[in-house]
Length: 391
Image 1: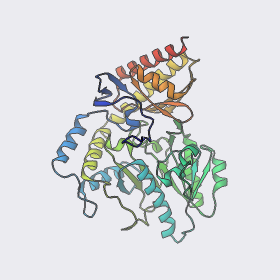
Image 2: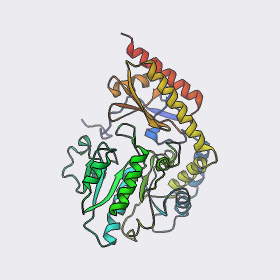
Image 3: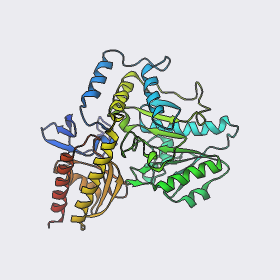
Image 4: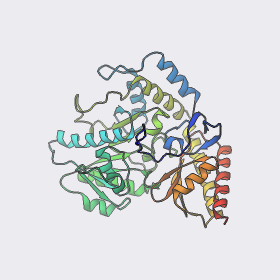
């Protein structure tokens, strides 16, 4: 008999009832150190007082009023995102997949509005992940996500991540855009080389294409900068963000330049719940914290510390750890056992992590993680690796 909750997740037999900072407390009272953060979502940890206060205050005023009217919270958050990014405009939605759907639509509409409706194809990278809708699984191109959902949405071509020659060879007269993640997340925590990203920007300019960056996971401070594209010194034309933007409240956004968004007029896109007052209160509170002077510098520092500590643990257990990779507080390691087993062993010892492609275990703690909590996490990891080595 099918469960009342559709069984689309391989869930651990574990339920949480409350969170506090970097900790989650299970229904049996056990405390876990959370280096999964809702898959890089709980950017300020659990129960952050400023986020709680903002939501409580807004909940007593207005939850939803629809996008048939002005939403002052949208105007405020959009202005802050524009002021702190490449963008001129923002569309608000509820998730990363919705943000990426909007990015794809903006790119197609741009060429249509410019008199080239034949330009609709998007070049994407092998191993990418852009969401679970029909269009975004086609953009991701991974067989495990596409199986059973044919026919595959048309218009996406795939080349190896980091291979500029292959990308240039894939450009056709009907190509509209290039879409990549600055760091492949679900694909296995694979940072894009800054020079590769700069050359993507140059190729887009050369061939009249739009450059779309998927910063759903990397955005809002995860890599030590507000957005990961800043590390390469380039800017996209269109970008999707979500996850950390709401600190745990569902909110996503598509950011674009004025030129890229030229075709997005009234009626071309919409969202019933997107940008509702509660979501905007959450996003505004997250930006209050993340944009405070020194906050991102501290994320950069603490991310470098975690990387050094993780490298040291890996060096101490070469028989168990094949590789460490990542950027900022978006790190991963490849265990010499199935990553699902390693995630389960770490969980049993009180540390929450999350798997990724290429047999990687992800460490994506809250941006507010402390040195003491990093020490505790590495102690658990070392203990777990030692248990795995012991016959």
